[in-house]
Length: 323
Image (tube, rainbow, N blue to C red):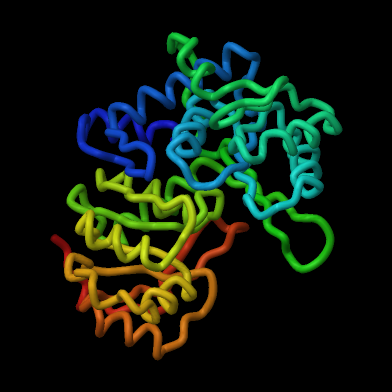
């Protein structure tokens, strides 16, 4: 099910811009083709359906491509929080039984060292210059001609193992089916009235359930995602104004720092029609201040990694504007 998100979007929206990062913009056709090449590269290296493949990197276009490529290969995605230490990554790799891991170049050396201590990890793939014993992502994709014969996953099949810290001990792996994640994204797209005219600016981490839903629900609707590698208030305000964003999605601290930024008045935020906030409760004063500054409703969300399903606990849909 999840493997069809980009295929369907590419068939419908083609050369429309799907993803914008600081280093590259990609159309739906390009995203679909690149993820097919990742899937073929994984299959050529022995990754079979239901094998676990980990992702450990900052937000970047390669992360999104790899995520969908893993799913197209029929494998199970293990998105790892970039804040986890090498010791914690080693535990996660062993606990989920990963056979391969994609990582950012700044993490590659530490990941290689961690992977050597974990039985079953056969491939470390670096987004960027790869150290010895790691595969280079660009070369990996360039060398493979897509030719896959993977049967579509059943709705109840395992799609994702996302680790959550809980309150004690090691992180716990929350196992989610294709149907659970797909419905979360589809219902979010419907609930937020997402369309192909939407431009979404976000700095939410792609491995987090909130960040994942933001990206994939927008792809389902044919909108454009402008993703930041890391959040900074002026950078977020600039992207909202520059790309005429219709949605910004973030956590309370992001809204607080943008409202407090001395350059706030320089940016035209009038394109925003609604925004979302999650991760923790937002102060009513911050919510009101953002709505007054932008004229856009701020929709407060609630969700859990363990459920793969989010929900709205407070909103005023009567004020939502779409373009």
